[in-house]
Image (cartoon, rainbow, N blue to C red; front, top):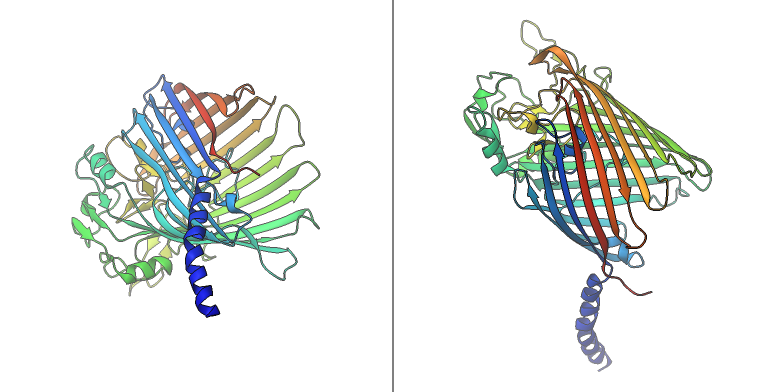
Length: 504
């Protein structure tokens, strides 16, 4: 009898518990409303008005948007084993390719430290300063987020029994591209350019941190990430202007089966048009990361490096690692004038060298050069809706005026400086200054190297009289032959706050 009473009691309270769980999803909900407008004197917008804005931008001289977002952080349930978060972010642009943009829509379900994230979500840079860095080589903040199913350790998790000296962060995800319409429309700007549709996406990464901040000021973080584009179909494969592969068909469907998903996870297989010289299936690329940090009393400093690779070329040490992104970040003691300094150097000229040769009976030596970063013989380019999914300094295909979805400036040297500070409690500033030189690509070199200098000077004011309101005025400028000369201004107004907040 006691068993039946217990069972009936359990069924009676389950609806109450479910209601309690659902009701807390309406607590700790935040919102943000934003209006932005920009205009420039030249034919295109300043470089930093367009890039590293998660693809919600355009190279056109004038643009803007109205934007609204509402979200709940999973961290709001920090005291619980089960955590839940969600978000929606919508923009109505003008002067851009779209008149309505669903920028973010996601749900996060987390058990202890493991999270399942479903949907499209803006994700921050790994091991770099989000505000001041020029970006990352494989997964950056330059393109619109892709919808995906992602299993992750979102924050560094201390490995048990290591006395807080080892911590791990990782993820694995599958997703899909959403730029079918954009690619078809962009393709119409030129005669029969390569374009793709219904491509899928895979990404994975793991980072290990060594260090215990409570006992020692130094910490070392290293890791590996790899991404791939696979499945889908491609048109006009014979007509791309940097190659002429006799194995290509004008229209090609790529495998969309379990083997394709497996080969995205563990690189293998081959594309059906590889002919006698097999490569791995899909567009595979990635980066190695390393960062060393020192935390002093009231200040900190870090140095970091990112090495990019295409397919198996430069994945390990078969060739010297000449192409790198190096960076230094210094957070100064609290003062009115300067808070953080970031300097970065990006070099991508080598790309395993200018020679490629598959082994034959006459000359059996394989020479894996001419990596042609971000370009691919089937998928066109490592991009989403025209914006590079990697580093913005390798100018995105959206800058091409002939509808060709490829990177024409992937052999570069660039230096980047970022500064920020908070002179008062209400006023802050940010300055980005980037200078780069481009040699084009190995298949299509520039006759004369092009140079470009890009400036962003930004001043923000958050009046204390109206909590949550801020104004940001930005000045941008381009110099040089790479993107021409232009000056521009941008103004944004943001109001943010709480839809509802749990009372303590």
